[in-house]
Length: 178
Length: 178
Image 1 (cartoon, each protein chain N blue to C red):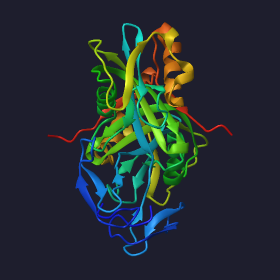
Image 2: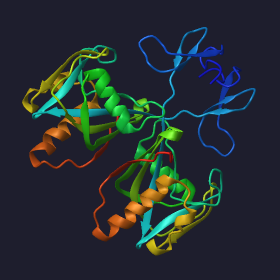
Image 3: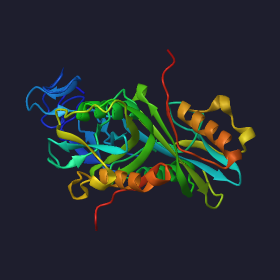
Image 4: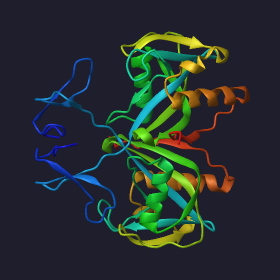
């Protein structure tokens, strides 16, 4: 951020009075522009014991397999965002079966939230951001071609939890290797 | 948003190509400025069967009782944000005992996330944004003076779950009365 989105004048980096972090503050109208993490919401869609994955048609991680997910929009709930992204990316209509993973990715200022979901009719397809969508048995998951750590972890949890038919909510931090 | 934060020129409201929502788009550099929901993270701190509440020293809801919580910052995890807010608002050091509520408030583009927490040493105080902090037994909770619906619901869940000593994660949407 270089300019104030309210008045168009330059911003400076400073710690406002009573605060303890550097913020973008307008040099003219003095508005403080806070920046906060974004939520990525998605689903783990299951159909007859198989998991629906999408191969990404866009960067980052073009060509890698992912769960349908994307940035939550204003005026949405996390569930609505997850359902919308599943429809957009996998052309699939699902029924949510509960919150499943909440994963912090502080390096990129994101929190990823996945819901378990039931693919209602077995229909799916490749949305605009998807090269192909496909159902995988647990044994078929292409572990070395998974898009993001949060997708990898969500899939791993499902593989562990599924035999017990017990799916607690998993909270995890994805930290950069030191 | 009236001006582009990258180049300082005016923005217009339009639906970008391939998108389906109105965005702020710069009339000069054509950058699309997305806006997304913010996360509020906090704790439900317990000490010897009592719940720590803070009376708000700031608007909105000045004078009302709340759980310690606030906006998650960039480069934080949700746990770190919850611990920081608890220290700032209630001057309390807590140990998190698990994710407890995830509540969407689409009307204000927020998601509120509360963790159950154990107040470690019984010490607490009033931070800068707090008039007073106080421990309440379940019977003493001032239900008609609670700050926000998400705090109210989190407290209600705790009162219901505590006798069973079973604390599943509760996901809820707080929707405006129609």
